[in-house]
Structure formats: C-alpha cells, structure tokens
Amino acid sequence: MRKIAAPTSWLSKALVLIIATFALACATARPSVEFVLAREALQAAKESESARVAPGHYHKAEEAFRRGVQAYQQRAFDESVEYFKESRINSEKAENASHLQRFKTGEEAL
Image 1 (spheres, helix red, strand yellow):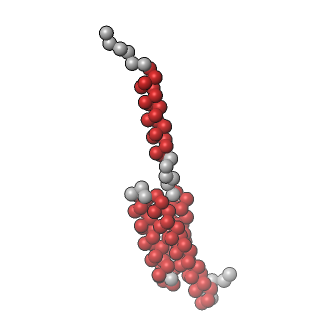
Image 2 (image 1 turned 90 degrees about the horizontal axis):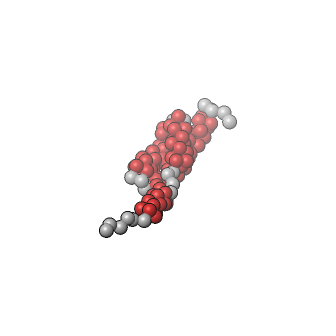
Image 3 (image 1 turned 60 degrees about the vertical axis):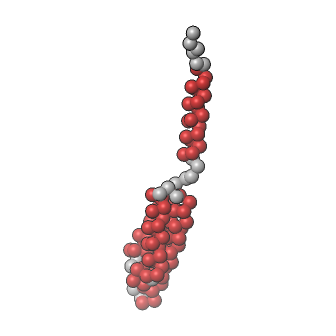
C-alpha cells in the first residue's frame, strides 16, 4: 500500500523557499539614491564647463562614476556606493572651481 504524503511537507518546503528568497533579495540594497546624486552632480559639472577649469577633479569624477556603474552592473553594490560618493564629491569640487573661476573673471556674479 502506498503512503500519501502529508500536505504540510510540501507546504513547509514552499514556505521555507519563499522566506529564503525574500531574505536573499533584501540582503543588499541597490544604491539608487547615490547613483542619481552622482549622475546629477556630474551633469552639473559638465554644464558649468568644469573640464576646462578643473580637469583633475572632473576626470576623477568621470572615472569614479564609470567604475561605480561597472560595480553596479556586477551587483557589487557596496563598492558602487563608494565610487558614486567619490564621483559626487569630485564633481562638486570641479563645479565649485568652475563657478569660482568665472566669478574671478567677471563672467558670473554671486
């Protein structure tokens, strides 16, 4: 005679699988805020022509942003957050240098 499996055996396995899936999905958060802030800071630096005035900071920002995107695509989210923060900081420095230079030359008023 064949035994009938208890309904709780497959139900409990399914429940464990669902819980494990949610736990793994929530393990690392995607750095969407850092990505957006870095992207917008880099765009603002580009619009203020900071590549001409502060090329060092601008190119560091571009490179850090590219590395952040690569790390993001490889799902190394913690690493991408650090690159995006570095990009944002260098973008802001480049943009500030550009505004300061234009203020000194009289092209821009505070």
